[in-house]
Length: 430
Image 1 (spheres, rainbow, N blue to C red):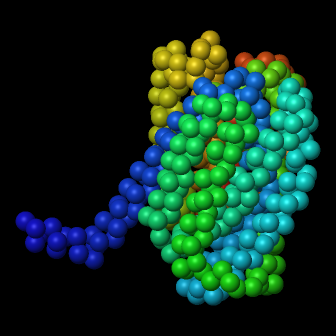
Image 2 (image 1 turned 135 degrees about the vertical axis):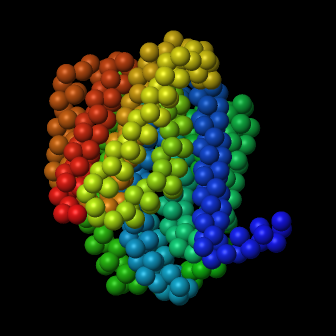
């Protein structure tokens, strides 16, 4: 029996299947572990921070995401594209990586100078003192500068398919973050302590990540002028879209922080934390389904059939998730604590918006996996128009209103990407 199994495993027709199965299992299990630990960390922060402090934490965390997107602006995409051409040369890959890191630092400094005054104003607007506002902004810096380098340092590992060591690094960050948050917030239930608990483990992990990356990329190389221009050419194409998504990606937080109350900000942040469980499905989709759709031949009927089969599967999953949220809303809200116990209807609205957003993201991903991209100017104009129309028709100063607003904006994104994807498939000749 053992001889038969060995012959099957070593057979060339099956060895690749087993290898892909190993990689997918590893990536999938690690992603589930990362998201599960992240969810536990998020719930602890919600329960240990007072409502006022959690509102400030939500604002700061949202701004951190904005800073990271602006500081990247397409640099990571450019580094991956340029690195893919020279990944077998340690010296050339090192030059690409060093060039990308230098660009990231410059973009990061400009982003920090532009965004920090906005965050300071919002923190003061929601009751933070001058001292705590400054401490919160300073506490963002470790997490921000760690975020500037970690995605780039992962590039050599991804190109050389060192998935196992990469996943170990990511899981270790999540575990250390959970430990720091648990120990620190019990004693010091303040926003800037929670942010430091998120940021410091990333710095430690980046030190380890840099050592692993140096095995495949010579980080002592100088920046390459030609590579720099190639990366900046990609940035010019992607930066406008990135700037738009800085605003639209967290539109509910921005609007309720301006027009709503501090309690409303905390409630939106808490409910959205529960909706992050959907990232497990999006991560597994990008690993298992999207690559297979990208490999399909340019055949109209085949692509249409696969496309709608995928959307039907995602819709069924979304309906199950919303049904569970509706049936067990009381039990789910117990996780967040007594301050959020009365948000049963709002929980269903939040999960519904998250599921519709998941469908919109998958439509967009399937389209881009085929190399189809809508004109960014037209996409941004149409999206902004939908936001303006919805905001004029819905009371966005209340929690219920902002969640309904989020649902309608996400529905528009589904329709936009769905119609464009179908249009591109119908244009095929085959």
